[in-house]
Amino acid sequence: MLTPAGRLGTAGFSTGLQWADPGEAIRVAQHVSGRGDIVRQPWLTLPEIAVLVRRPVIVNAVADLIGPDIALEGGFLLTKWPGADFRVPWHQDGAGVDMELDPERSVTVWMALTEATAGNGALRVIPGSHMHGYLPTRREDPHGGQHGRALTTDVPPGNLSPVVAELAAGQALAMDVRLLHSSPPNTSGRPRIGLNLRYVAPGAVLRRDGQEPHLYPIAGPSW
Image (cartoon, rainbow, N blue to C red; front, side, top):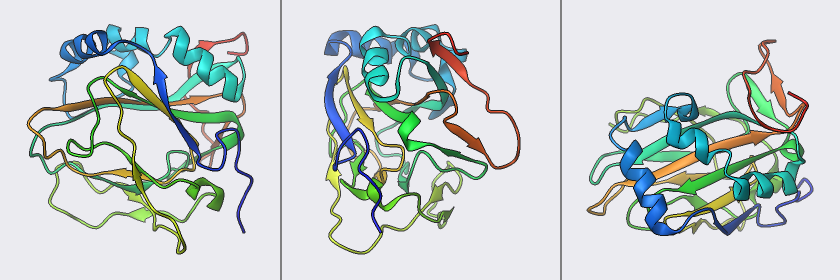
């Protein structure tokens, strides 16, 4: 049985949010590159990212989806270097080993610091897959990469076709935290750098281990 579509509609994502011109985005990418393939909670260690996560155009877009009280539940700065075996399997951002996000009170924002294209490892998303709800997870099979075995899930049967979510540097994509997405290795000649952010409203985080979530307040008086 399919669940309601939610505020991002039947597709479960939207593109074209412009948070900077390409030149500014690429300058930020140059400042933060070289810190590792994955930098978790980069707003705590990189001043440039701490500014980006509060950029008004992003915060306003998030507020339109989940309300004015906003915090970061998690996220990372991710660099895919040319030729590296760095792929991300099909998964949903809102479900983890010890937590689950309420899709009505959370949203993922993916910000392109460099362009994201079919050739350099842009996101593949499956429109409408969020309406299948959260799916069972497992550890991915070993594939020779250097980033461990991520949580993944199987794509449900039916007429679900992935599309490439290409973005110019300085653009962002918003997606339902249940939306299935993945990304292949970068086969281009230049790095692909993106920022994945999970924004939440009060009460959005269910911790299965009984622990309090570690949230980073962004806007609103409820934190």
